[in-house]
Length: 447
Image (cartoon, rainbow, N blue to C red):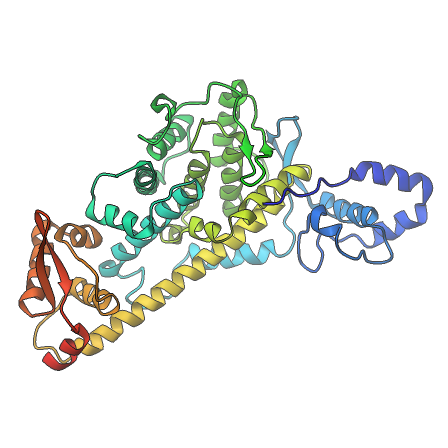
């Protein structure tokens, strides 16, 4: 990730222009807009574009900054290391993005009956989202386990083989914990508990889990160049900063209204900026975002994975932080980036549900002429088996996937085996089930 160029000091530009060229200053005042072609651009990009109205790049930057200052809202309780407060504005496209999220993540959503509103399939989609977020959030922080092995570990409920799998298991448990505490106010103790869950058995010093870092020897580096891109606040300031963050999370500050979605995004940035722990800050910050969204009744966030979107272009994630830090603590950059991530995650969820729905309906159409009766769990497994003829199924994994007792899982699989759709084989000290040869043809011809 390339580190963005530091913007020029707009105060100096303004003072010089006021003395030397008042006419140009009047032109700048007249043409003030906070964006360029609908984009909230940073100096790093602006300096490569052709300025409008025969302005210089510096004068164009001054025009943008003046327009943004007129709309800016300050968070007095959140400041950078130098003491300057963070701020944000709400230019286009933020209102449109917030409207989309309000419509699609907080209210009643029209979906196929196989979707999230159907209790029979809800658990399956919830398991998918928890698994996806656990894996990709860990991979963002360096976990190297393959998706296949990670899913196997979670479905089989087996112990982690290494630190990477431990990180994924911790993230999975953290997401479950967030669902449990979503109605509780945020406190420092709760933040510590979230961090302990995120980092259990995955820190170099186990005693660092669930407590503040005890030194200022913490830096965030750019991966390629090893250049320092962030120096967090002194560790002695962390108790007061965490109290202020919790007050913000609980809506005590500031006095003006902040959209719940914007508040959740700023909470994400706040913990990541303060970097209060020796490790696990990124995972903890993303967990707090989920807590905040769920507390404000954006229930769909139980089923989306922001980390899976972030992982597709991690440089954009880092750049959103750096644009904010290098441009006078302007959180707008990070807010817009994060809103777009949420929107993409919602679209991915709808796409996933549509694909699953289509697959289930295809299987149902094949099974419609069946003389045997199949429940929704068995239909789901057969749908997966049709697309994955080499798949392996165990009673334990089936039990966890569908949240049923062992006896029910065993009976379901035995029934499919008895009807020739699955084959049982010994694997190690236990048995596994595999799709029968040419299961698609067998489904079509046998019933």
